[in-house]
Length: 218
Image (tube, rainbow, N blue to C red; front, side, top):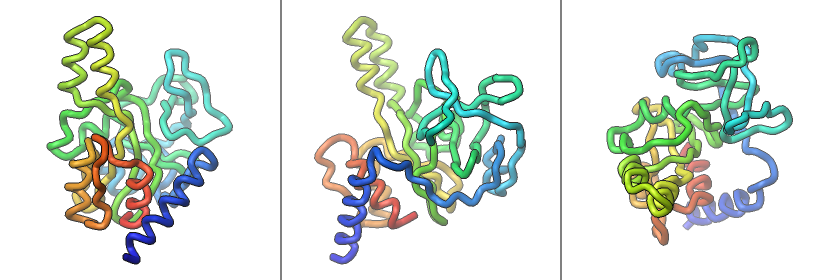
């Protein structure tokens, strides 16, 4: 009962804070670029080249006055896109590259894909157990089917496959775990925090409730 009440309070806080101030978890990672998972685990930056944050677009714009949850990074000196890295710690925020997530996720999550492999997603919630973030992902089989069909109908199927999904970096297992759908999220929670299991009224879990639960188990 007490745990349920705590989740309810966190839900209210989450709903009230949406669209106001970006969540900034305490991230204890030195500033810099982490090229590999091993460097990240050791908290040892591989590179300290200066980077700038830009939007995800055909003509990316530099982001100066906000903290984006999803973005691209460019090397300041060369203006070349940052590729093939594991993570970046930048101005007190930690970002994972989409490609590194898909390369280092659990076996069951290998069917997931994204349209911007070199993009980055910001850690929203962090603790000693998990680092939680969100990323637009799609099931590669469903998306491939849509593109294969072609035309407006195929495009609609491919687009509908893309969903903003929650995921965690699991410190104990040293891998990412993607919440592909509500049932998958509940299977994860059943093992680590049964009170966080949802009723699954839709295919995807309630993301506000997911965030509230992650605050409890982080």
